[in-house]
Every structure is written in structure tokens, then in C-alpha cells.
Image (cartoon, rainbow, N blue to C red):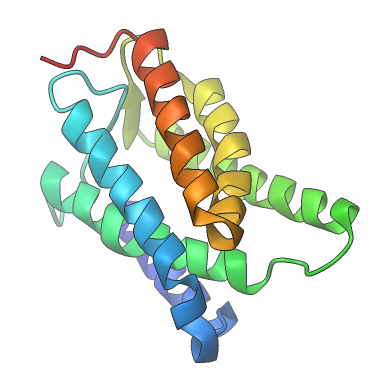
Amino acid sequence: MHLAIALFIIYAAWRLSDWRNWRKYHATMLYITSGGLLYEYLTEDYNLWIFHPDFLYNQTITIIVYAVMTMPLSVLIFLSKYPSNGWKKQLIYILKWVLIYAFVELALQLFGRISYKHGWNFWYSVLFDVMMFPMLRLHYLKPLWAYLISIIIIIILISWFHVPLD
């Protein structure tokens, strides 16, 4: 299933993204990559969610595929198609992406490709997505603010879920 998601995102990015201007989105693509890898580093022995690999690759490769391909390409699509005006259109667009991510995660859960630990659950993932997509847009527009707010969010999540940092 992870492989199917990755292949679908590659296809969707190829068809839907603004490849002429990919450099405009590159920093935000790296922002989500670094966030995913930072999560893996900070929670190495205390994962809140775990991807269960498909038959073609192991846990580490699954994480790398999401961190360096699937997530950055979805950010490229998200930012490429972001409505330029009208806060209602922008809100609906963000909610659409939250629903897409929620649907994919629900499918992963139903097929046994993701599990939760230490108090995390599907609804926390949905809330995380509600926060993540505006943060991606903020990073695109004002990266320093996004980094500052991200540090605050990380501290809150580490505290809330009692992630040990030793």
C-alpha cells in the first residue's frame, strides 16, 4: 500500500504540479522532509505512529520514501494549486487536503499499514494535518515565522505525549 501511495503521488505531482516554478516551493518541500526526519529521530525509541512496511521494502525504506518523496511531492502539489485569493477558497482548499490525508491514513489503518502508540490516534493525525497545511503555507510565505511556531508545536507535542529525550 505504501508503494501504491508513493507511485500515485509521483504520478499526481507529474500531472498537477507547477514544475516550471518548482524552485519557489523547494524550501517548503525541504521543511516537510526535515520535519518528518526530525520526528523519526526524536521518537526513535518512542514512536507515536509506526508505518508497517509493504512486501517490497522495510521500515527504514518506508520512512525514507515518505520523508524524501511522498511528502515533498504532495507539498509541491499543495502549493502549486493553492488559491491565490479569497480566504474561503483557501480554507476549503486546506480542508480538502486534510480530508485527503485523513482518507489515506484511514486506509493505511484499515489495511494494517499504520498503527498508533503512546496515546496517539487517528484523530490526532487529523488535528495534526489541520495544523500542518496552514504551516506549510506559512513556511512558503514567511519561513522564519514557520520555524518559530514549529519549535513551539514540537515542544508542546513532546510534552503532551511524554516523549523521552534521553
